[in-house]
Length: 156
Image 1 (tube, rainbow, N blue to C red):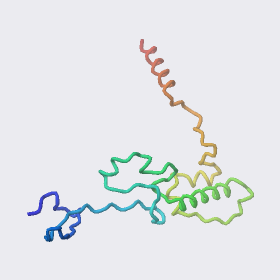
Image 2: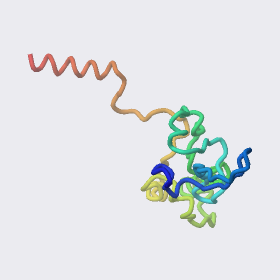
Image 3: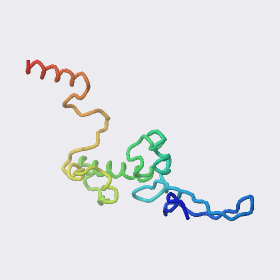
């Protein structure tokens, strides 16, 4: 009888002839599929593929590239997304481009944050050009320590 670990459909049965001349059945794990682009279906480059146990041993930098939408969109679709966002923002923000005949592309917009279209059509720009954090509450450890000390003083 077959061992319980081999009674699964996730393993492939392969018939092989041994050096002794016997025909035996080998049980091989099925290879996992390569990651694909969510928009066009093209295979993603720079991404590791494997079973969950194999992926556990890789570090994060070898699993996913360090760029926006990595692991979701290929570079061509990402370039198209960036161009689409830039054109739409220019059309609604700059008066010189207001007469452009641009259609909305919902296949690209589904990868943008919710409410993006409302902000763009109202004239607000959601994408930061300088890459700095927005001004507001400080979240570093020094400010947290100060708030803890203030609370301790109020209680005492």
